[in-house]
Image (cartoon, rainbow, N blue to C red; front, top):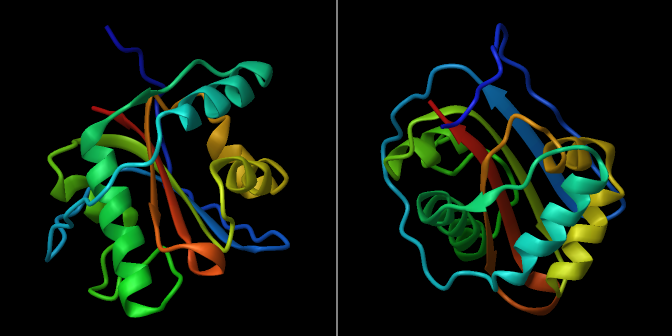
Length: 167
């Protein structure tokens, strides 16, 4: 059985680090997006160990991979690559919550970290760990599920980390 934290306000957390990256955290009622996203190739599961190590060293419980969050993350990473933009807001106006909802995941709270240019899971995790806003998402004890997506290659690699908890 999952336990939940009571949420009384919607909050958005923004941060930027030395690379190109962004963090978004929200709670509240999900909305319905206009277009669902479609996943492509998932990222190697070794990222889960790195993420859970960071969480454990900061007093947060482990998160588990969720394929629905994987679909939301991969669809956004693929869209940013295909359309050459970098934002938490999709070109169709969708928020991370909209993209998560489109996969059938009924969220209570979510967070999204995005990055561009890192060439490995280790590099992107290091960048997010060294950025206050991203790190806050990584170690938020309210999150129970996660997915990481990657699109592109080399300096044109887009990363999307989605963390969430279902209702």
